[in-house]
Length: 496
Image (cartoon, rainbow, N blue to C red; front, side):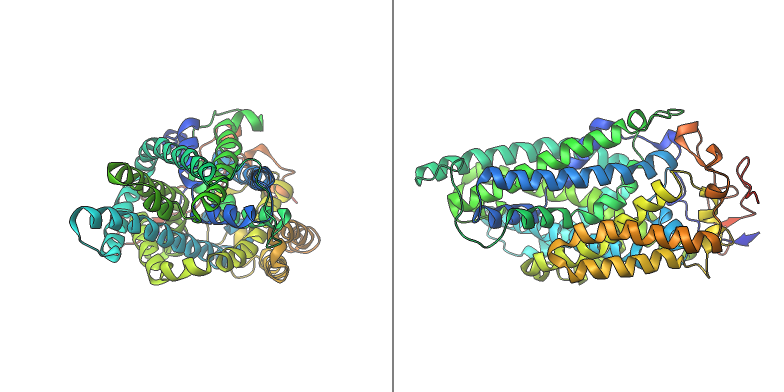
């Protein structure tokens, strides 16, 4: 037996029997994930320069584009049951994967800290009003611990919680919107006819900004879709991905647009865009407590699926050699998110959003190109877990992916105002050219050489991928997961 540093029981392909999330469940998860503080602020900033309808159109279009990209990358989870970090070994190599993957993990951890801080301030306000105790940091620690425990229980717990949180999020959103429209009318402002007169931003920049802060989740959504139910032996992409793309294109654009509109209307009515501050300023008594409780649920729902799970799986992928578990990865995510002091980052939120959106937009382009254009959805899955397999490339690094990422991501940062519109297409173009005319000649890939054989498909042909020899019940006496060998799939042969 030989030790394999690429295998962990938490990042092996998900089998059909473990896909427990329905399309409705995924919709609820997306409702929870789509409520983030930046959307309210973007809406408030945009309304100063345009009408409410123009603002809504910019946010809606941006999120429709992101929803399409997310649906495309989500097929990686649907088809092969792979997590984001495990698949990234294909375009970046078994060692090179750690740089972009851990970068995404750290960003997700920071977002966990930001959302937890916002929830903690709401909890602290409630407790302070009822008891006089005032310490947001105490509630930050408590709230972080509760979220970590809930997410560590497993994907089913996240699914069940989303079913509770999604209606709460919708209720609080509708209440704030109606209340703010009424308050604005009392102040002589018809929000539906209002048109901002400043030149602080443009319609185009509002759209691009919205695309930027979803660049991360659009590429690592396989972390969730690998648990979404999908019909076996279904060759039609749309039928197979129904539970994937419908929640994407319905929940994300509509919820995000509504959140941006609420931020805009709140600014016009109360001079505030932050929903926590708006509720505190315009409500009292039990109504205040109930609404703030719903805000807490919204932060919790966002964190579980959008931040803790992606961060944990990237850390598990990097720590497979040390037998790092899913639960340990979640705890690490919580610690990392706190150490970055999210309460300070919140003051520089748009700078933070801009740079990470630019860098990860290139990753999105590379993944889509690798999966759909280079490999045509075929994948030698077992090689992802084989230290000597085809994804070893040059000492574990796929330099086509690394160079494409550095070049496209660097240009996206340079043209920061247009980040996603630069990084994504350039990621596709650079990676395609480097693979097609250089790296595929140097490192032939089985899927490509086989002329895209169905032997490299998963759900489409009714296959659950097996990683042979993985000791799933317990590690050996040294604490290592082991394999005897990685046996090839049927017809898993590189033909000359």
